[in-house]
Image 1 (spheres, one colour):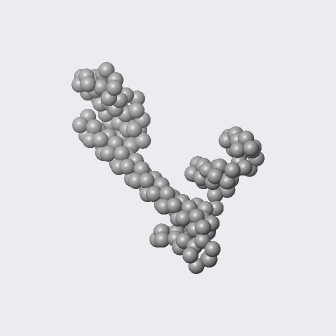
Image 2 (cartoon, helix red, strand yellow):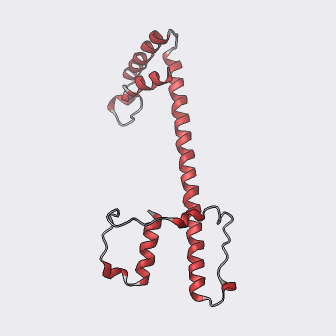
Image 3 (cartoon, one colour):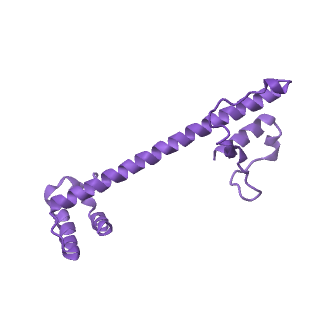
Length: 155
């Protein structure tokens, strides 16, 4: 029934696209709700009112938006972990280049460093798979190689 409700709701954009001219027209919106309610009541032998259907749609939209916010929060968390991991990697590489003894090499402080170490195993694209066109002359400089590795790692 929920799937049918969603399909019927989708056929009435005046109910959910706020930029439409008929979005603010109460009479048109009420007719749209009636066009959703009648087929649902007939098909599922229920006696929903238009207000009941509106509440159900409102609940579905609220739940959907909450899930979107949760996904965005997770994406931000992952981005933060990747950023912290990359910072640790840069510090380790920098300390290896500048320090003579292995005892002075930077020790990662990120609490989950070992758990996110798989991020360091990013495979570079083989020939013909990358859409990045580079002149081999530009890669002679070690700084450019570092930039290229950062680019490939982040995308």
